[in-house]
Image (tube, rainbow, N blue to C red; front, side, top):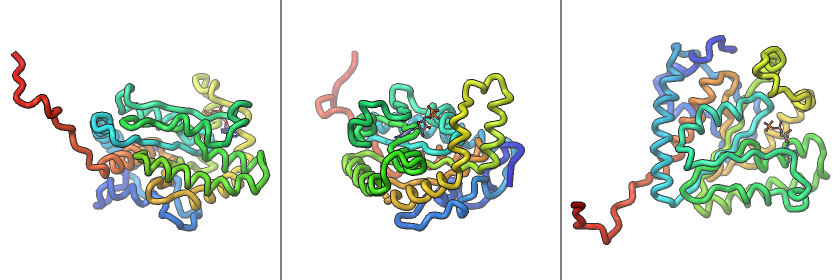
Amino acid sequence: MVFQDESAAIPKEKVPFAEQVERYRVPPGARVTLADYPPDPSEPLKRGRAQKLLKRLRKQLNSLQELLYATGDHAVLVVLQGMDTSGKDGVIKRVVSAFNPQGFEVSGFKVPTPEELAHDFLWRVHARVPRRGMVGVFNRSHYEDVLVVRVDGLVPEPVWRQRYAAIREFEALLAANGVVIVKFFLNISKEEQAARLRDRLEDPTEHWKFRSGDLSARAKWDAYMAAYEAALEECSPPEAPWYVVPANNKAYRDAVIAQVLVNRLEALQMEWPPLPADSSGIVIE
Ligand code: ADP
């Protein structure tokens, strides 16, 4: 189903939205067929509800991030992956921006530099992992090393095949050190991508976003989907789950991501730290 009005997209169900979004989580060890994960929301909703919901979730995210900083016990790592035009930048603009700018850092990962290539594939990524108290957002990530690298055959198959295990171990190490990892695959349909690429060609304010290279990845759509299925299947343990987010509808996509982040942060059951022991009985004159 394609929605004309993207503000009309939150399903009208009795199940609370906080629970609904968990249906997009990839269970550990499950076989993944992307055809089972729709790129459109399951039901249309009343106009304006998505924006209202996002407004509320943004407020929650803002105070949860402050609590994260105040307690300093955990870091949060948000991984954004998806085909070109799937909305990675849009999510940063509309969801991640809810955080205090002092509390988060966005890292983009492009074609590796010669220096990066001279190290193991996780080297550049590890350096960008957030410290405790902070949120780190990866716009593309170490998963490119089993996506574009696999599809384009940039390293021999035995090399990319062993990377799934390396990624699992890397993420387990981070999780054991207090990093909460949440990974989002922004799931758009091939038709929706065509429409968005056409917009880039037609709208002068979007021309700068158009890269002819995007078309070569589009031409390998099926190979990319197979590579995504393998990554989702191999690397979605409970401590670092993937969510396959319906991303054809921007308002719904944003609300789902914001809600998942709220869920993950609330699950930490963080408490405001008390006054330091030596401050009791102090009177400010
Ligand atoms: P954006 O992330 O905004 O699309 P670019 O248009 O510069 O930025 O795209 C970044 C490009 O870098 C993508 O084509 C992506 O596949 C590529 N890339 C990222 N990581 C790797 C990697 N490890 N090996 C090869 N290419 C990579």
